[in-house]
Amino acid sequence: MATCFWEDIYQAVENGGRIEGILEPSRAVILFDTKAGDRYDLYVQTEKAWANHVGTDINAILSAFRLSRIGRKRLTIHIYGDRLVDEERVDSMTFPIPARVTLSRSICTPTMEDDRFRLLAVAMDRKKKAELKKRFSFGKPQVVYGLMFITFLVMWLAESVGSTFDPNTLIAFGAKVNPLIEEGEWWRLITPMFLHIGWFHFAINMFALWSLGPLVERMYGSLRFLIIYVVGGILATTASYAFSESISAGASGALFGLVGALLYFGLRDRSLFMKTLGPPLFIMLGLNVGLAFVLGANLDHFAHAGGLLGGFVVSGVVGLPDEENRTQRILFSVLTATLFGLLYGYGSW
Image 1: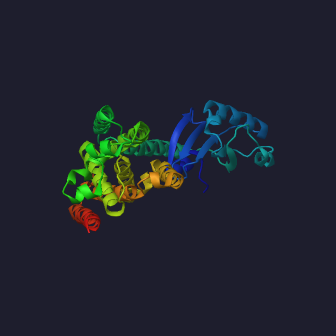
Image 2: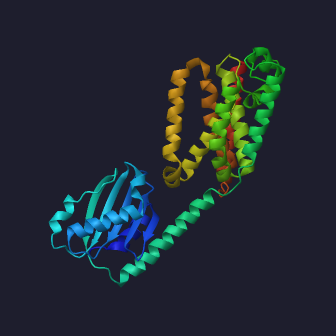
Image 3: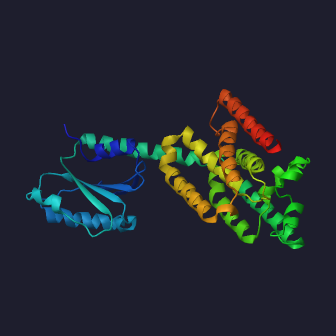
């Protein structure tokens, strides 16, 4: 027996669709395909007898849902109803929107079962949205703004007594300087993440922290976020100490630690990661790789790599707020300590 309107919608929600709108009385439903990321599905139930009347009806629905806004994304229009007098004309329908439109036709009449599937589809959609909201509500973005203020304060003080383009000023305010670390000034593994070379460098990193930080803090909670940021930043500086002789400073290593935290989340919840974070995160990483090729020696690639790996392993130590796996945390704690020991040892050797 062929499936019909709400049964198909229920199966779509079960497979990752998200209901974006319902045009009552159950005349049309729009879903976003969270797995594909660039596709919408419009389900239309019609009682028209002629194809041109169905086309007019769909155009009105497209306008009601404002689907011209989806741009050039893919749109599949599923048409349900009795057989039309001129059924053969359905496949030739066109619609004046920029999206790439595909038509799907189902000849069926709604039954009492359709009402049951409507209730199931709406309930499942609400449950999934509630789970998604919970995932991003473990903390409020408070620590991230505190870090931004501290970083601004350090930058302002450094610029007040000199220029952060002057190596002497950078050294005085805690930049990473390998010989000084070897002499015992271990705090230089921590302080560089709060110091920047020029206001432009500061602005770029603070914009990245403002963009990415609140998301990670909501996912992990404030204390876990702080640990990931600081320890990830320390591992970033240690990687730079191990492989680069240059004086360096900046929060970018700690920021890559936050990217590592998102990648850890993707490992734990791959489906939700791809639905919400995957595509924009991969774009961000791609842009950073491209920027590295453009700017070359002006970027501390070793700090970025160390921060990315450090943020990932530290995330395994603190875990997500709803994770309870003591063995895993012990394993990641050993990995974190080993990573730090190897990097620091290699830099000191």
